[in-house]
Length: 344
Image (tube, rainbow, N blue to C red; front, side, top):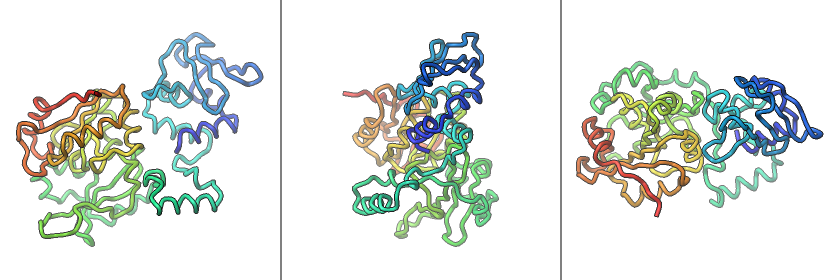
């Protein structure tokens, strides 16, 4: 769900009072011919501590609370995040449920067919980024029944992924493609794709190590966030890996505050989702990613984000090895080879 579209829908359909009531706000009163509402916080005594403006931005002024989000916005969405103590995506989903919208609605579907066709044509001509076209949609849970669900992958144990972790993340095996099947869930825990990883990597094999068995809007995903969010908030930092495997390895090692972006380049949507975690970020990419490449990725984030990156300047890793492949090496890297990103 696009936040701008959702706020416009709430405004145009006069849902503000209903939302405030569902939030538990009290003394909700409309003022100045409906230009704004005043109300009190659920756990506050002041009946006019909060002002909600009845416009397309749904700006909120909270005199006794700091509800401003990571982007500096103080609106109906950040108010929901504050009151319900939830992540941005959960706030959007809650608002959608209140006003009767499908969280996974694509606003483009409401555009005239001619405009949708034009956007598709622009995509083919590569004038529009892939992530602007990709749509995140849940898929049927029964799809997982195609894959062996029991944690039988003893081979992955040798790569640092325990059987308990495999079971926790529903790792299976696809007999047809002979790949490890990794269910991809979004931060709301809904199944949105299945990624396949070659079971055994033969250097002479030209097949890609990873492929999507069930298609997924990959630029929208922070893999593992549905399980790691509470640990990220508790620890106060998030470890960002390239691959889903890294998240599983760290989980097995007791580091349950990691996510994967499925590569080494952040999409705009992934940047927004990480920023909205409102926490310190530690980038832990593979050995073959240069420091200059990592600095380019760091520069995509806002100035107010505390960022660090792991760089193996002591030569602990080999080849394309990732920091997560060896527990002892990872801990040494995290302690001695973690560098602060500073903007020039």
